[in-house]
Amino acid sequence: MPNIHRSAHLATRKSRLAVVVGVALIASSCGGDDDTAATQPQSVETTAAPTDAPTTDAPADALPVTFEQMTGPVTVSEKPVRVVTLGYTDTDVANALGAEIVAAVASPFGDDGVNPYWAATPLSAEVASLDVQTPNLEVIAAADPDIILAMGASPSAIELYDELSQIAPMITPTTGPLLDSAEDVTITIGRALGESEAAAQLLADADQAIDDFVAANPQLAGKTAVFAPREGTNTAIFIDESAASVALLRQLGLEAPDEVTSLSGDRIFGATFISDEQIAVIDSADIAIVGLYTDEAREAFLAMPTVASLSVASEGRLIPIDRTLGAALQTPNPVSVHYLLSELGPRIAAAAT
Image (cartoon, rainbow, N blue to C red; front, side, top):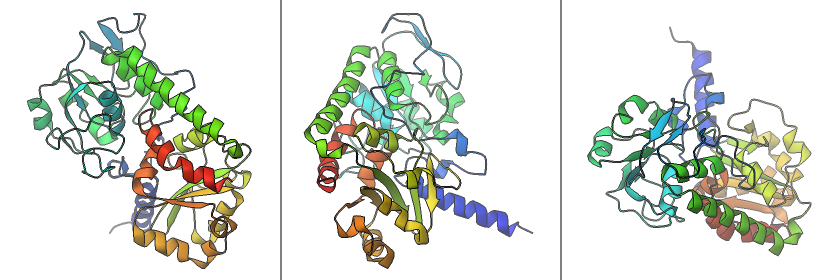
């Protein structure tokens, strides 16, 4: 006879995972009760020094180069030409570095269903055809890659390492699935592609864009903000300092209020969960960014009496965002951060005025 209580717990946990990774990054690949620590959103504090850079004494872009990674060491013997990318960030960074991408995951964060709005160069639907959870091994083999980038891949894709590494050298995370910072991912991909200088420029450009935004919006100084994606009746609030969205908002000058950081409860990917009865906690922030990923969800949330009575709602400091902005904020990288600043930045600036 099935354990009904355990089944109910797993169902609740799955729905919560879907909220935190509701931008379709890794939710369906996570299961069971002990995988929380195995996956985290990528950090994007691009000004921080890299902590998990490839372990090697060779100068930048010297070949061969060996990377120490979670799946064991891998050596890139010569500059790759044909590149396969299994994670959204892998594609964003490799594309921005001018790589010849011959197979990639299809991105839902754009009009065409295969390229995000921030893609440096749009890929064809034929190239960007891989599923982020279960990439097709035959398609990858047929693409004849020189290297497979999977630093931002889902755990289920990394589980295919034994098969994929037979096709081409595969670059996986240093510490664990989605645990490496966006800076470390960018630096590693740059080295693996022989484009370290260009990768460093991506990070510098992202830092400059953030600095320019902060300088143009001095009203943000001293303000607080929360990011709370919601799906159904589940609302997550990112509170851990290591969470990428918290780190990026801090770079913009926006700290999380004490009422939020002191919330109790289980943490999943740096977030905790609140009930609708607790939704008033977002009123402790000067700016509340709420992920509402359908028109129906947005209308229903804003119509809730408990929401309508909040100061952040009545004073125009509550910012509903769609799934694409949710993805850009939850797992920013030095490519997507420009889109985030251009699309969400003005709304944040107006709410802080």
